[in-house]
Amino acid sequence: MAALLQITGVEVGFDGSLALAGVELAIDEGEIRFLIGPNGAGKTTLIDVVTGLTRPSNGSVRFDNRELVGRREHEIVALGVGRTFQTPSVFEQLSVVENLDLAANHRAGIRALMRRRRGVAPAVAEALEAIQLSDRADAQAGVLSHGQKQWLEIGMLLVQSPRLLLLDEPVAGMSAEERTATGELIERIAERCTVVIVEHDMEFLRRFARRVSVMHEGKVISEGSVERVRADPLVQEVYLGRSRDRRGHDPALDQQASTAEPPETTEVPAR
Amino acid sequence: MTGGGAAEQRRHPRLRQGAVVAATLAVVVVLPLVVSQFRLALLSKYLVFAVVAIGLNLAWGYGGMLSLGHGVFFGLGAYCTGMYLKLAEAGSGLPDFMSWSGVSSLPAIWAPFRHAWFALPAAVLVPMGVAALLGASVFRRRVRGAYFALLTQALAAAFAILLVGQQGLTGGTNGLTNFSTVFGLEPGNPRTTQILFFAAAAAAAVAFLVVRQIVQSRFGRLLVAVRDGEDRVRFLGYDATRVKVVAFALSAGLAGLAGALFVPIVGIISPADVGVVPSIEMVVWVAIGGRATLAGPVIGALLVSYANTALSEWYPDGWLYLQGALFVVAVVWAPRGLAGLADRFRHLAWRPGSRRRAEVAVGAASP
Ligand SMILES: Nc1ncnc2c1ncn2[C@@H]1O[C@H](COP(=O)(O)OP(=O)(O)OP(=O)(O)O)[C@@H](O)[C@H]1O
Ligand SMILES: [Mg+2]
Image 1 (cartoon, each protein chain N blue to C red):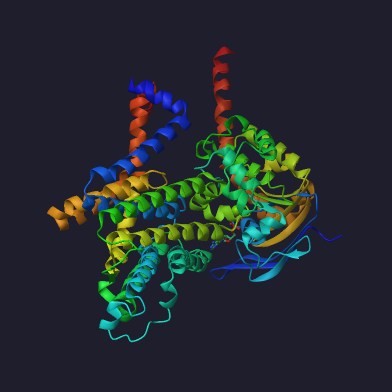
Image 2: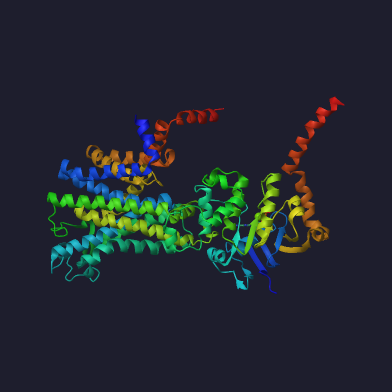
């Protein structure tokens, strides 16, 4: 059986250096695949290539046996490929429900577009529920918290019922609870479509990942279960070394440390 | 009492809308009876400018396409109508200016404009077509922002130069003028002035309602989305280029409609009415009135044009500076122009409890 998404020999050059140097990647229908790799590995660039934002100098991207390279962004969306961005990019001047409504109507004809929105479509209401924004439906998207914006963005993809979802760091900048809730939301979404997630966060990875692909310097260097990838010496060399480095500066961990300290100091005099 | 009335009105938006419509109709009906013919003609001209501003606001205010060349679309509409009027007056002969510039037979491009059924739709469709072609080629290449503004500005300059250069075809610097008949009416007759005033008022009303419908529709929301995140819209599955082209063409069509009315009302169309300076003035109307508001462009066009007439009689150069200053003030301190200021004022003055909320907000901001 052919993979749903088949990437072969994709190369992208920026100012002489190769951001993608012959990427090979195959994603099967129904999979939830994690894509990891150090900063600048080319993860975002790869998503850009699949979704038509960046045109590769070489290689092919086949989705459901159709070539995506050379198609325009909205045509690729129409084929059933949705994406989010590393920084949330909802329409801040529109309300939450208007954001979802626009997403839901991307296949509508000009007549439906020229009419006013009346009420909330069932699919939109369902998405509002799923992203826990039902009570903020009429709020301007601009006033939402960072996490809520990320969720709204996922909701906008939900209402489009795509076949393949590409999520670029969907839990970046979220609190621990938000991360867990987002992971659960993504798992629910993954029951209905294939998902590729770019994520740095190790906790998140351990908890939700099944299959992982590791990128480094524009190539996929390892692939397999979390355990297998972690045991791969090549990965340890390029990724985990850096990951330990990142931990030292991880603000979330620093914060945990500082909130853990006060009880100790208050306990000392009590003892 | 006023506060109670206002609260009542807010609770019944239909009622309030009805009141606004009734008041507007009353003003339109009564004005021709109470103001002089001269002033009525001026008012008609301001209303024509309001049509331009309403259309430009669709492109710039809601769509983020700052056009510094809307004079071109206005001019295309105006010249289409002017050609018809010149031919109607010439009968089987040549328009007067052609004979003076040594043209011996009617240029082919003029021939179809003998018919009103061709010339009047063309006044709207030609600018729409030009805008659509320009938009399709330019937006597709993701030319936007300042680059788009400069490009349209250059277009306005080129258009004016072309009109001046083609003396035999366009009447050159003098443009098209001295019409002896206006759609079978006698120019200068008070009755003619009244009819043209009603036509201008009707055009402004239609333009307002059409743009309001568009803005409130899904397409309008989509247009705002394109303005704020064009690339994001593409990944929602929409052809952002097409959205922009449609809005830009509609905007140009309204400018063309305004041009078509301008000619009979003012009695002349010349390169001076369509070049760089008029194009910038159109943007000023929208900026001062309030972009991305429905009423703003109407208010802006009427007030600024009135101020222009009133002040430039005393002090022509001063007006130009004042207009520039107002523009800068509006863009920097009141991005939603007079309409935005009026909104804010109304909220402060009339909303029960809003005072308190405002104080809380100020209190929260000060420390
Ligand atoms: N528009 C661009 N112009 C020039 N270089 C770019 C551009 N976009 C990305 N690059 C370069 O391409 C390489 C891959 O970048 P990319 O953003 O795909 O990495 P990433 O794996 O997503 O990293 P991160 O984890 O930081 O998001 C980097 O070296 C980056 O500097
Ligand atoms: Mg990235």
